[in-house]
Image (cartoon, rainbow, N blue to C red):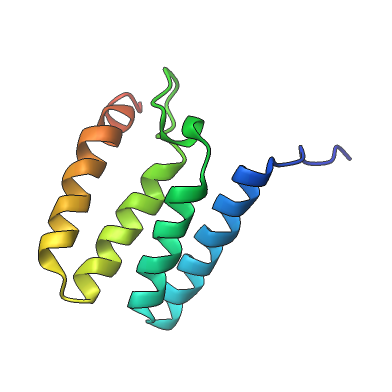
Length: 99
């Protein structure tokens, strides 16, 4: 059985913060989710934001989208729209390429 590749410190920090955000969303702790997803976005490597030629969106796309939803749940509508606009601009082209 092949072992999973070791993550860099930035990748591990991103994954840990993303997991905390996901747990907070599940528990309905919207403000904690926003903070956790923001931490993930700040700590992730630049490659997590790049759009590749492949069918998958950038790794940060789900975090950006989830943070937007958490902003909505906190009734921070302007923030949610701002985040959603950047998510669309930065990540939508990867989704269009999907079969």
